[in-house]
Amino acid sequence: MVLSPSPSLSIPNSSLLPHHLCFRKQARSMLNHKKCRIHGKLQGIACATSTPTSQNGFCRRDLVLFGLSSSLSIMLPSLDSLAEEELKMTSLVDDVNSYSYLYPVELPSKKFLFKWVESRKPERYSSAAPLSPDARLRIVSERVDIIDNLIISVSIGPPNSQFIKTTDKKTWTAKDVADSVLSDKSALRVTSSQRMAESSVLDAHSSEIDGEPYWYYEYLVRKSPTKTAQESNLFRHYVASTAERDGYLYSLNASTLSRQWNKMGPFLEKTVASFRLIPPTENYVPPYKDPWRFW
Image 1 (cartoon, rainbow, N blue to C red):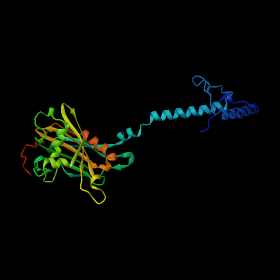
Image 2: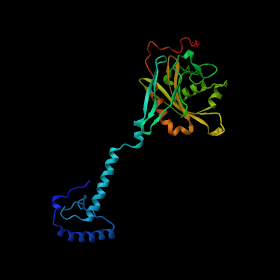
Image 3: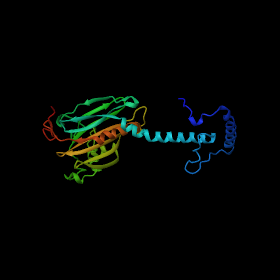
Image 4: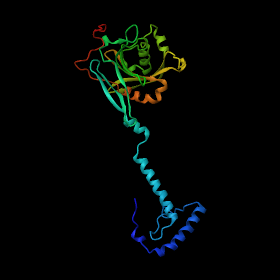
């Protein structure tokens, strides 16, 4: 873009020569001293348009660049905030067990799509797949992204009296709830203490939502070694949320491989934070109704 000259600068060409000579002398002086003097609050930069100098032009350029960079830093969001805004999530509502949560489906700016497959459709507790031989804890729904090695599942089961010794859930700690759920979470025919040895709780805390306590915990589960990963380095990294209703614990677990946690963990944490028990409808089937009915 070419800017038209200011009327105040429209002077005869013959008068420009002395000024050009003056410009050269001032430019050499500026380079020798390597400084640009600014008087007061940028008053030294402001000068009469009829007698511009290269020194003033240099400072103006810096001032313009500074102003542009400041404006861009205000107008453009940081990468972290952009990552939070761009994540698209969709809702799952299970009317049979009366809960809901959000799960990630797309990162538009990176043209990344999650490849979820519903491996277990929502079903009643009595017909759900057990997680342990005693069939106390059962998976009532599950979705898997095989390509990115992600799993989101919801399980229901009664509290383990070894860790939760009272019916007053206001007194339950997040660590006790985590231990209760993890003690029943194993397909192996082993004791509760052996099942817990497979897991390592990293963090546990609670929060009250709509007057009801929700317990949150983060844990690692050791997986079987493979040819490419040594046993001490192969873990699944989990985040979970648990709530209680009708004497049963409803737990959402989200996980990925430990080496992918920095990339996928923040998305799974959003899913866990969105987990809610919702008001029952006429389709709700409480876990205690026909608990051994498998059809």
